Image (cartoon, rainbow, N blue to C red; front, side, top):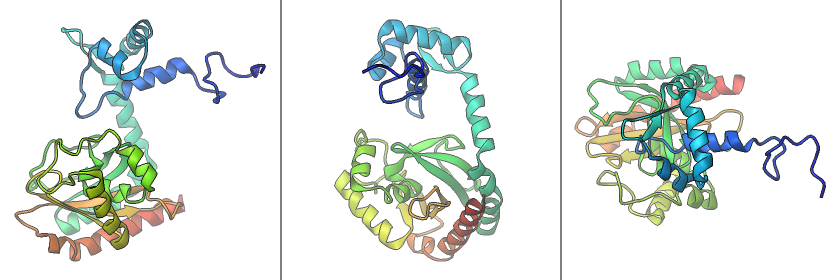
Length: 268
């Protein structure tokens, strides 16, 4: 079959506009997250499947433009340009902008830490965070990610996936790593918890992320009423709130805030 003369050179079969060199660069940048902060060139090749000569050129290009930087031992890590790009994306997000005032009001009214997050593969990405100084947590901030299987926002968003989507999303997740004492121990265990979440319409996290932390989360909907655009939660110290208290006034305030944000999203 004759190739479409309008298809850009290097485009992948099935996509008229895909630029493979750019796609490879993005594949490299996506390797880095909360747990992977630096990699050797060989590790980049192994994880992406990109041949060494091509990976060398991709890394060199990203390094020259400030998106990657090389450490003295030869390891490669994200550069400042990536941070600037991410910061601009967050500031410009309509979801973040529309959520800011309702979340601020919720934080002031409840006196607790509130968060806004979205599902990115098997992680929850924190888009907004208003923190109560009394809450002792890991170094979570805007742009941080946590395993979706252990967080109230993550479980809530996972609950809206089909069974096949859930299996694919969590295919590489290690249920034995980096979890609190009450975290799900297997995919089957998690499925049972997600079924409860779907039925009740909210998600609780009781020391599943880490000992001493609890949270409750509800969905935020845009124009698609069947799938959440994001989730918001209230996070508390277990020493000050039991699980029952999360189902009371805190959940009512959280739902009211989610409704406010959802109305704003649908109006845009």
